[in-house]
Image (cartoon, rainbow, N blue to C red; front, side, top):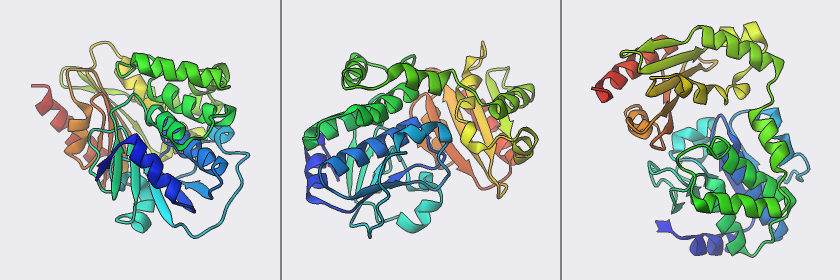
Length: 314
């Protein structure tokens, strides 16, 4: 059932022992949402915790490092920034069909939760700002850092077409509440580990072009992680790079998982709907940024997705 911000806040006020699920291969928006909501619920006197199927990249430790570690039997399950249950990764095996509330901004959301708060905002953190205010919780500097992180990362530091005047106003209000925008943006967009720098160089050397060079594909393999000392948690900045090549309309980043399967991150311009492309393979997302998973190796996945790109670009 679709609900509004007021109903969402009312549901959360009625609950305690709240478990918050974030999507696999976590980014700034799902983590900012999850930990921002967790902090707000704790301030409201409730028990809450955030979990993820994958290791959280160390650069996000400022979002949660000081939080208490509650161990409780969850009474209420909330998913944030999760368009489909399979995007929960391994958590879907435990929580599929059991999610009470989903807070999301993806138009491709499959409405798997009992209640769905869905608004196509620039980021879910932008929507979470309204939810927390409706809860009656005062946004402090820690919550502001969480929400600002999600807004900044999901808008490419406010560069994407999804940014609206409301996005900028909320970001400014979060700064007024104490969000350390300079630190967050430097950490998210200007700081690279040496292992990531080695991986980036290796990946870009192997970039391939298809469909009259309108499609760019980069592949990240387990062998590359071993060669560079990097890992999947460091690969988030790679996906936007595929769209930066002149003449490229579809950028695809394929990441190999330890079990030999892979995930595709898709970035496009307005000429191609990324969410539509992802949906062919059971994924989803936004018109210009989407993702999907493949139960096969990178070579086969690349062949399938490039073939579908060719159909969409005709």
